[in-house]
Every structure is written in C-alpha cells, then in structure tokens.
Image 1: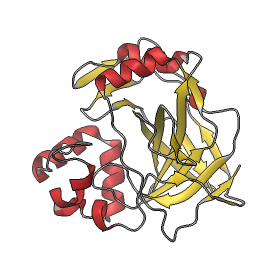
Image 2: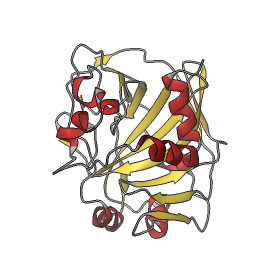
Image 3: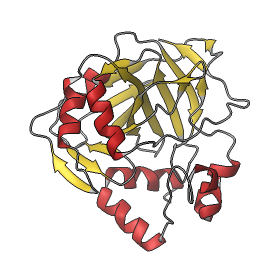
Length: 249
C-alpha cells in the first residue's frame, strides 16, 4: 500500500503528476505574507494542518547546536543543463535523476533545487541574503534536503547562469549550458542536522535537514535579480522545541 511519503516522493519526481494532483485536489492559493500568508497556512486547507500544529517544523534558528557525530553525507551531483522553472513561489531547477546523495549509507535521488530570500534558516539569529535547497527522496519517500546559505560577494557562475535563464513570469526555460550543482557547496563541510518539515504547505514532517554552516558567495546583482522576481519567499522561523539540533562534519 502506498503511504503518504511514497506519494510525496512520486510527486517530486513527476512535476506533471504533481500538477494533476493539485488540479484534482484544488489546493488553495498560498503566499508568504498578507492574505494566505505563512500565519494562515494551517487554516487554508485541512491538508495544511501541520503548518499550524506540527511539532517538528522548519526552518529553525541554527544556534546552540550539540556537537556530535552526525553521520556521513556523500554528495554525487552531476553537471546538467537543467530546466529552470518559475513556479510562482521560487526559481527551481529540475533534474533528470542522475544526481544523488548518500546519507547514513542510504541513497537519496536529487529531484530539484530551488532558492529562497532571505535565507530560511538563521545562523545565531541572523538570516543571510539567500538559501538554496537541494531536495532528495529515497525509495520509501523520506526526504533529505541539503541547505546552503548564500550571501553577497564574488560572482557565482552557476547562479548567474540560472538567473539569466530564469523566466520573469510563471513558466520554464532551458539553461544554455550545464551547471554543476557541486559548485554551490562551501569549502567547509561543517553542517547542522535535525529532523524537520517542508518549509511550504503542506509542511509535512518528513525531512532530514542538513544545512551547511558556511555560506557561499554569489553576486549582489544576481541576488537583486531574484529579489525583483520574489521580494520575500522565506517562511518565519519555527521553534526547535524538544528536537535535537546537531552539528558535525
């Protein structure tokens, strides 16, 4: 029998299927502020209930972490001329499935990566300019998301190429040449790990979060290009509660 996680993993792997599911389920429109904003997500639809009552929600403030052996994270991402999608909430790069990550010896296929401004996670209470999320799913439907904080600085060729191709309205475009997602990884392998949720509705609590502690640099002009499309697409910080927030490498 298919469970909730298996269904979600399937939708991540198949954007067309996800579109059909939205059409059939008539999920309500949501946004980040104002009517339908983050404070109202849990009341918009019964399927979004976790956004309001969940105990393991994301993002969180990455502070007072416990130093620990947080398990091995092996990343095997491949360069690819992705489809760049403006989905009305963010700029997202869809991948073919050739890239993956191994966490605690278990394989997770990379499904897509997308961007937020400002960063969704905070470092000791401070958010950076942006954050990129690499969304992976395993065969059982469990998600592993790798987060990388971004700040204004030196030009990042991959992000520059993505923003140059990004549609100004909802739709998709093809990258002119391959982008290597590994170039988004910081030099330091120190990272935070905790159990959390999707940061957008339905806020399902099925995510193994791994957020690198060191931000990468991208050109301020490319940040501004993203902000012009999405002035703010970051969920408010959620309480860590009784969860373990671990830090290691």
